[in-house]
Length: 257
Length: 308
Image (tube, rainbow over all chains, first blue to last red; front, side, top):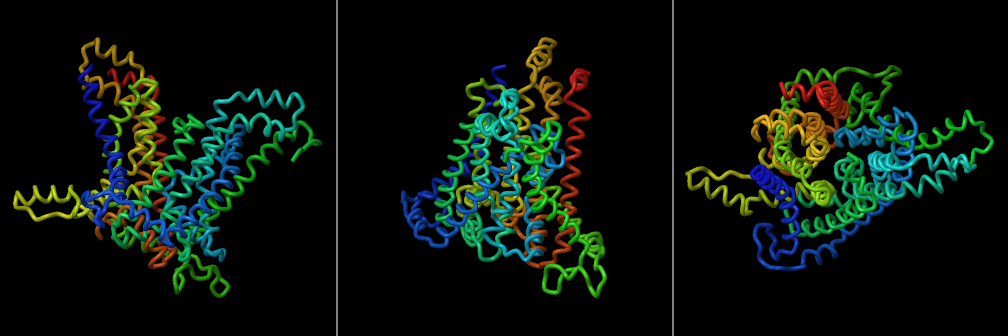
């Protein structure tokens, strides 16, 4: 029994190493005083300094932030509604539409939205990207909110209704405060998914609009540079912080799959 | 906002549509309709300067099967599709081999560490996708320690140096890396529910660790394996950025061809055909995985099968 556990520990440790060593290398080399990402030369903050003077990068970060704030705000409202609807009613069509964008390969949503926007003569740019991001974020928010509802006592809402509260007041003063951790976690997830998205943004952004992932993509297509390591490390720090906060707010986030 | 005067019978229905309506409308507009437009586009004629030719040509509807005929008559596309299936399959198997010990360890560990260990598996998934691809550009780069070591050993055997980056190897490693969490989560969810008494009983009856794993744990975990396989295989099948960044010219997969049709060649009808074939393959696999998991296993009959 003991021996088997030791073997399991070694195999699992190798698994964790496989997951973390690559990310660790990206972060370490962002402080490396060498243009080549090949061996450690010495500590420097030059790459971060360069980053904050790179106008393209700052503009891309601004776009990403704007899109992520919009997409997470709208998708939190719509996703919360969808989560409540899925929990309370037999909404089969909604269920399919909520889960399908998550389940299919991302490229399919990217290209179908590209055709859609171009056919409508809708100019590709910040707005088309935000509309696309909302589409896939709704599902993630809905799943988290529904998971939260499953863990709560619906009789409280019924009691409020029996005491004469309107459906809106029962929701506003009873249901919403109870599911709030799920809603906040969903909003943070949506923000993270939006700011990180590459594939769907790649197809819906058009020629003139650049987000942070698109900027990273065009940089790494040309060359490996420590400036990419620096922006990657900052982005990782941001998204990981948001997800850790989200999972603290709503521990069910870990079990929602 | 307050539907006060509505009778009790209609009230739930109004409530239902107030809650269901907005997200449903949004997803119909930005998911269902674009998908249908893509299906329609697959029957249309490519425009002279890319995109689509007008739907009505001289007063008559211009719909045809030309792009489908092209897909089935030019064998290169079937080959690329087969290659994509092969890469996705290999990714799934490697993910399974790596994920099993991780999931088993998390399921076995005490309540205190379980959430932390699980979070550690999920966190890399939440870091930016491109960053995770980029990390492998660094690790497999020609000047990095790994390539120098590998080529040093090869040179010792009198072999020509091999590039690690821009190769099928790089594509496969990164595919496994990116999709690993999707395999761990459903496997863990399954393994967590296993009854330790079954393993104890098998041990009492003289089964060794190997037999206990292959005849009890593994058969019982198959629903988790199928769920994980679907979650890895389907996105891996449609990937384009990993071959695009880490692969050589021969590593072009179906996702790369779709991207090329939409953004470079600008043959939208043909790009739509490829996308529809990909969708059908993905849906087929998702349904298959659900059917296999539900039909065969996860019931006491599997316990019987494991004992037989």
